[in-house]
Image 1 (cartoon, helix red, strand yellow):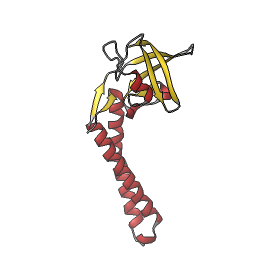
Image 2 (tube, rainbow, N blue to C red; image 1 turned 90 degrees about the horizontal axis):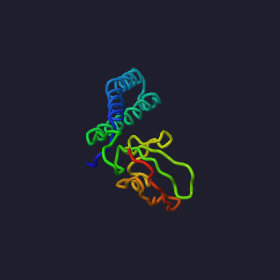
Image 3 (cartoon, rainbow, N blue to C red; image 1 turned 60 degrees about the vertical axis):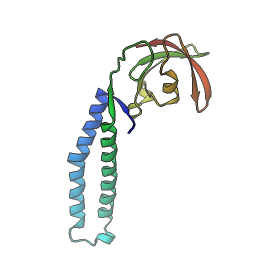
Image 4 (cartoon, one colour; image 1 turned 45 degrees about the horizontal axis):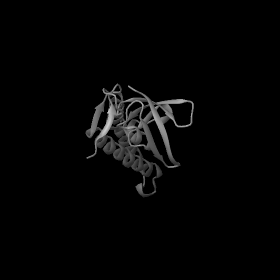
Length: 154
């Protein structure tokens, strides 16, 4: 089982989603199935078929979340040390650019690049891991390689 890195907040959000699916969504789908099955020819009942499909999707999502949470390792966003690791906030500058970028390195389940949270499994995240302030890192991105200089790690 591979380890899933999550912040405490991310773990709590996924746990809440799992609880919602188990306690609320399952019951809603069971009621839909019961209502659709009452007095109808089940072979030609589109509502029954739709509810069965939704049930399969929800059960799959529950299994995925259970597996993800079972393998979770909680990280803190203020990671100790001076090298980049999961939980670190990194300020860097792409070679040839004047602007700095800032990201928090998180596990894949919590990655939201547009919110400044990149996965440790992404090309940029992989390239930054283990480097320190002042280091140059080479990022092997789908569009080609580029270099970044690490300005700050916190």
